[in-house]
Length: 158
Length: 170
Image 1: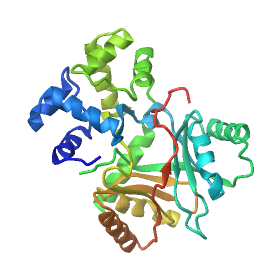
Image 2: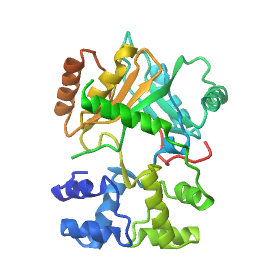
Image 3: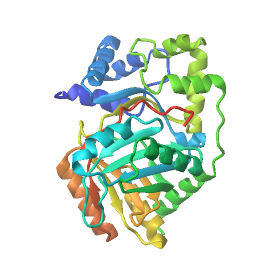
Image 4: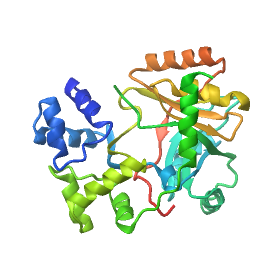
């Protein structure tokens, strides 16, 4: 999908969140010279084309006690990476699952998934359950828990 | 230490000492129901309230409260990576005693939206987003020059999960 100048303006208006008022799309339209209906239709089109993958409440789990955040990285043979990626990506509590390039020799891992929980031990148990239930015992993996969060906010595109 | 480094360190400490926030039943239902699928109707908050059997005023009050507490970052879009501009996951291996200082340099770039310490030889992990891949490359090289540490550049090849938000029972 090719984005117009107007699409970029709309994205700039909504990327920090919708107004918390009864008619948020009217407010956004007023700032851009668009009608409420045009804003709704355009956001719908951006969702349908996949530019926006979801619209909703963006929760910061850390503040709710989800402080154990594990990035699990796997060294999956290239011919299995799609299948293992789909397997892991559909497991409960796995919030992200991405294939990325290896950087040999220092970085052999090509699949990354994120698992959050309230306690480190529970996250480790959960990872072990996934490994066993999905038969992934033979795939080398490393678990990188997060320490300090130096910065966290939504991506900016403008 | 520079004043920006002090500010960042202070904000990190404040966040880490923050009390865990407990949600009531309605708040939990709201967060579980609407991490995706925000109604695209003229009155989204009234529609959310109707689904939950409550009032628009209460939904707005809860959302404002949770936003002020930092539990919600926004009500709005999550963009699919790689569709607008260019982005990558980057990692650095930094001596522990220099980590805070290097992290504050990295965080000071407005192209960086996530920056975390992780338990590994590569102990600093951050996401860099730029309007173009050329600009992204420039930012990464500048970071290497300014900090003196090489970057492991790990751009997305393929996404395998379906982003459904995050159920609160995990």
